[in-house]
Length: 251
Length: 249
Ligand SMILES: Nc1ncnc2c1ncn2[C@@H]1O[C@H](COP(=O)(O)OP(=O)(O)OP(=O)(O)O)[C@@H](O)[C@H]1O
Ligand SMILES: [Mg+2]
Image 1 (cartoon, rainbow over the protein chains, first blue to last red):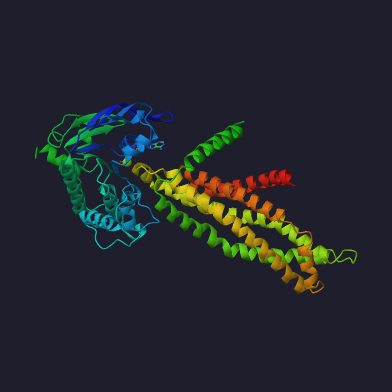
Image 2: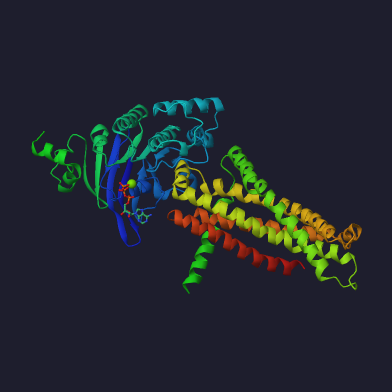
């Protein structure tokens, strides 16, 4: 479980995160949703300690991020897999080397074992036979899927996905959502997903945190998210003409 | 006033980064592979330009000497002697280092800068990799190994180039040129040159790495910082040239 306690983050004068309190549960897909620019990515980067919050604490089970020394932080990070919003594949390595990198760096296995793990991960994201390609030779969506494969290569305890299906077609999106849900349940991972895609919210939202202008506005799950009377959240969900109509007619 | 503040901030940041860089690699196998790769791209790929510049400047220096010191009061050995001293003490170590700064500093800074803005460095960091050491240490060590070798090569080639220059003018016999080259030769000059280049190699690689690694912003910034990397490492090289020369000579 990951617990966020009174976390605030400033960039200069601008308060990007405002006193956030949240809990992300083990074995569940925890969602952070919100408009573009609401602070989702910043919150996620605080969680993996790429940014240091100006106030507050982040607990990884019994470890408190702020109190860890360098070595303990490195050890914690070996339990973390992260998918960046832009993929962040290593452009000087081919796909196989990309996915193998975290395994090779920290788990000195035989090359054969590592290769079969890479095959397994790439197969899970529906990519086969592209091992020798370079990231620049793949489409954006394929890069994203490779990035997911890399994030799950080391079997992390905590999985962070920053907009896993932006830039993917609806069909592939669902496959990716299902994949994230499956591995979360299968390996009992604490998964945190940033998204503004309502399909994934309905698909995998077991614990939903809605962020609005850097504040945590609403908490719930996919069952009660549609019936909320929170105005900002309603505006967020029912923004298109189609969904507005459906809501008006109570479908 | 603001400039002075920036300078000290930069310098402090640079020292802190270097403290992170000089750490034992987390995975020796990966480090060795990266080191070999950097030796290839920073060292071996620079051989051609070092070769060309050395031949031509070596020849040009001897031709200039022959034309400008035409007076018969100068002994024949002066040409070889002067060209050797120029090449060993100043041209090869300093001027070739400036050329290497132009080539390698911009490469290092723009490579690291691009990795930074595409979040590749963040991705490494989240995996638990000590990114400063993983990315920068192989570059610095590759420069420390290859630059002195390149400079020794440059000294040799520029002297051969000088011979070609002498032949092309035709007023100086080869044996007189070689006599001049051998006159009062001491290994101290060579050691001096290698010490200088060793210092420069650290300056070029570390300053460029600092510029790239700490970059913030987008592609415009990559251009700005890689230019800065070249300019600043050149200036620092010139300053150290003066300091080292004063200390040793
Ligand atoms: N490095 C930074 N420096 C200054 N401000 C920043 C920085 N990173 C983010 N911000 C600001 O923080 C706010 C939140 O940004 P963030 O990237 O978290 O948005 P987001 O919710 O992830 O949006 P999106 O859905 O578009 O990815 C934005 O207003 C942005 O301007
Ligand atoms: Mg974002």
